[in-house]
Length: 450
Image (spheres, rainbow, N blue to C red):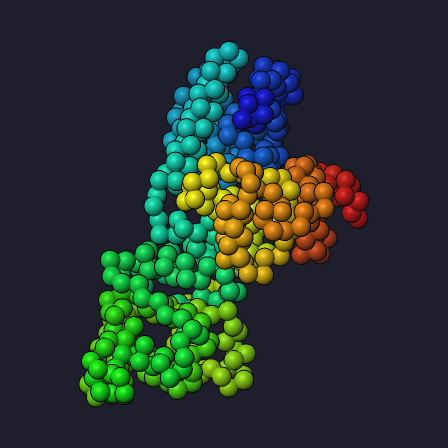
């Protein structure tokens, strides 16, 4: 970000001094406020990295109470913001109090603009370093959820839920359409838990014939049926001390549902053809694309089993609902497969990205992954086009990326929602939106709202 684009908030109630400061610091995008309410609104809206503020603010400019209240609120709303407090020449007590509260630095008035500029520059550099440090730390952390690529708030919320329950023994039910990454999330849960050093055993309940599924899950004793030449442990036994992932649990036959329920209740089971109870310590994680409550109504799934499995329920949103994730994933897949197949640095063209954005992706991430893999292999050169991806080029009407347009649309939506919630009470609406009443009136006038 260039210096001319960097927002610097000046909180000063003296119009002449405010004008002088804006002129002195015109290398930045200077924002100005003359009171606590408007300053706080600008902090919430613009999130300036650096703020200079006078402690003496209206309605009582001879007192510092309003200034200290603003300082406390700024640091609560934007803790990374660097606040430079301007004090009187001999006002050492208030300067030290401001530093103790969390202000970055203080400067005595009247000040020399050149010296204050140096302090402001240093504050900006420190803010940049801290932000870069946070970014690098996030990149270095090899957390168990690192295989999940997303910027979608709902998907990130799902990941946070998984991280929170990882170190418990709660049974987790993951719901989501086919191809959304339910097994990937289950593996992330296992790797985040204290069981990560043990086995993660997965079984697809829909992929194994019903007559074989019981022996696959619970194992069998020698001679239990024709062909049972030796005692064989099942998936549950193999996952002892680890995690058992039951994919497509909605397809589990009713007879096996009863046996699984008993195991969940007692934590013991018997192999097929066996009489000895075997105690197992295993974490159960289940997943399905089906609506289990509808299956319960249809008599195809036991309600008591559902409540045993659904101690923690999380729903993975489909790819079409994750704004921006399709393009993010497509670029990541293109880099991965280009490296795997020694295709060099391959990039998706603009028409390919637009086609990916507007496609519905009924197969979700799995469909997108296969699509990009095929495109990387089949592309004639280092550019992957919409034809290579196998999608029709989208109409040349890309999403509006003008920030002013996007911001105004969001502001109008917020104003309408809040005004409806407070039944038109301007004072309450302004408080909820974090703006002054004159600012709210201006917004209403701009959007043609009554």
